[in-house]
View 1: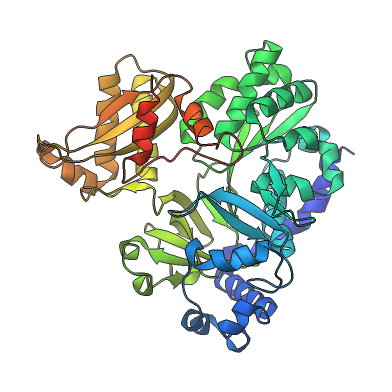
View 2: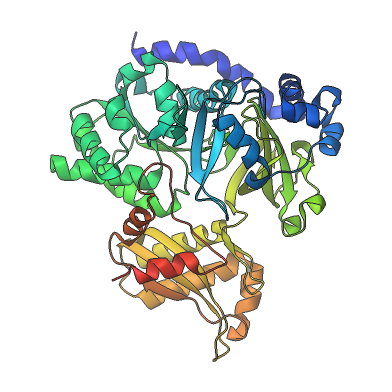
Length: 504
């Protein structure tokens, strides 16, 4: 019996457990909330917010405020310095470093032992379980998995306490048995210099029988391109003939899909999206023919959702709703409560449900990643669909992009400005711009209204980026590699102005 068939027997019991997601979503989520409150009732935060007396969701809403990182960072810093029983029971030793807030370069997200096992690792196990269920012919465990991770460092020099990319924390704490079926070596995986790391990964992995790869699409593509340079091959299956799946997450896959399809031409190759972040593991693409993801309801994560029309109001007027009250087709900002001590925490991501039985969704963007300078309410999902259409119309391939508004000047003209790095440039950039603009009008009625007769918004402008511009900008910001990503849309010009300045 092959190792994959043995693994299939191990994962098979989970298949029937996942069936509860079909009809028991509300019950699963109420159980999660009850368990979280019971475990945290004797923490400082739990006592201050009456967790011990909280009987149901309605009590929880009355007793517990909505939080951003700003409200919790003082408590998190105390936890980082070794205090126990603050936001979560016991001492939390691991902190996932995430992109910062207005006032801080970085956020430090607690990763408790329960959160590690019952959120992050449970999500990773379910990805494999669902993939094996959908792919009876899989042989993934008969080879190795390439897992792309970041790096970590000591936390305030406290013994055994680490801060760094979530992926590095996961690799550091992974079951030693998993190291038998993964590459690269732990030492290489945790290197902080990405350019050195990608070269070492390529050289370590090129002779291995790699069947599956996991990571952020942009950084994985950089590693695989280095692999092609080192080996002199054209297609990845020439190096790894048994490659069959890419488990990806962190950024939208649309801008990278065509590049991967050119690099990997094997008809057996599949792509499976996951929604995993420093704050938790939330969704898995459970059907290869459906781009929506299944919301994972029986982890240590309780969900609430703020209708996007309320998001610019004061937090006391957000009026969040529980999962069982959401509607299909509406944009919501996500709020989570987890066993890592994040209580009613504004995640910053926006989602739209495509089904409520089971609960399936797509990520539509970020609460702070949009352009609404002139009432156009352009979100990342609109941008991705517009770019995909423009690429289809012109044969172009987009590597990276960012966009921001150009505000009204002395000529009383406003427009959107896009900086786009192409893996394959269109023959006619004006045709690309027109196709993008028309698709944005098609998918966003507010944008269409503002573009009417060029009265409010002029046609969009595209600046073609030189090769490597976005990597250079990330390197300049100290964010090359790991889980860092290029901001796609911004309502301000600080990011795009920095990038344009480097475009020479």
